[in-house]
Length: 272
Image (cartoon, rainbow, N blue to C red; front, side):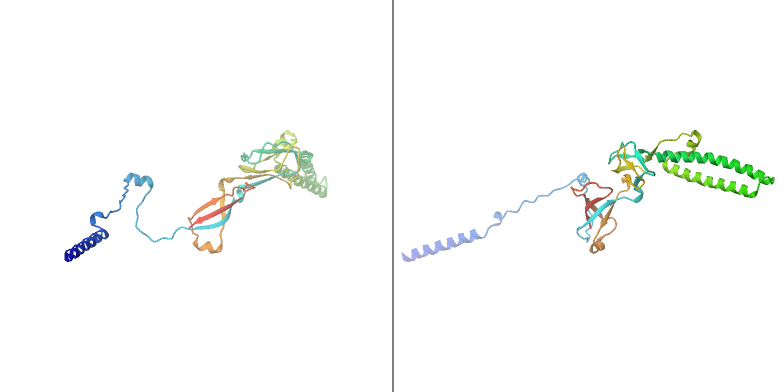
């Protein structure tokens, strides 16, 4: 009886041990393979997405170089307008930021000096005509020994002096924009002169108002042609070896920076 009980217990222990081993070692049917997702693109989708396939190559990873910069323009794209003579401003029709074309009238000036200069030119022209005729008469008299050579030489000196005076007055009138030929033909003196834009561009400074007395030392207008704007960078010497032609540049204007004259202050990064 005892032998039968011992045999039964031993058999139960063997069965339990076998069940434990079966629970620890999973079968092939119990293993789960993770689900695989495969995405395929048609040639049309690859072309639309800009996907290209090439050979593997060794290349450096992208990095950024921070630096400062400012926007500038070439000298011929910046024009300053001054008054060639002192005068009172008659009209002001432009505001800062407006676009003006080359030759457009910016303002007009009026002053007694403008009138006096034209009057002096007309008087000089009349005197020059008299001196030319006087010299011709004295030259004919000197040829017939009717007058001395000294008198003829003095007439020639007076004629040359008046010619120089007229040339100087004529040059000054051209600076003022006065048409000398029209002044000689009509004899009408114009009381005002016009200041015109020397280039096409945007007005960044307008320092005039109606009735203001301006002088040749006063800056009246500043015009900028922004068709040739360029970016000038200030890069540290340690970053020079990694710079090369054709690099991509990203520039950003600070939010609180306003457009003053012809310069922007920028924050710039270079991609290498």
